[in-house]
Image (cartoon, rainbow, N blue to C red; front, side, top):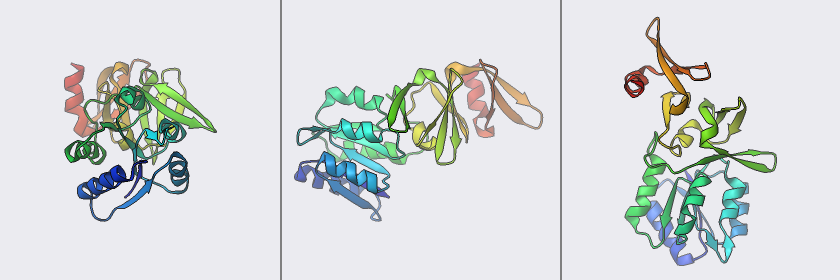
Length: 231
């Protein structure tokens, strides 16, 4: 696993690196950058799994990095004293916002959100960003009917019938989504607002009818849970 730390204060960067190594396996590659320019160049030239980002980089704005790479496949944890920017950061789809000053327990909580599979509680993300050519569009969660896994990518199926591709996997997006979304199948996450009724088919197969008349499959292990929620 490869982790990038972007932090302009060397003392804090070393502390973050130490805490990161304490939490994760020894078999870990950590890259450290102390400026906005170095961070941008490193991400351009290195596939990473997790970004630990400060928002104030020698007076430069760490949000420039979020805007440049918001639709990429890696997850981002903000470590910053600028707590007033937390809501904006979550709107860009960050996994967690760790306020400075922080301790090892708080950082470990953020790392747990990264390592644990499945939907996380308290997701504050209101938008998902998709990148086309050199432009980025923030798609409101209210526009999304369901999300379909497509290998290492995902398809965002929107209320107007359009399909947008996202670079994050279904598993990665599941950690960011609010409580109104539910994993109904290994390949599908559904917005509950779109659900109409559960269908039991011959042979023990299950599916769910959406309000727009589309039908999505339901996993056998998810059937009882979904049935209970739709009653």
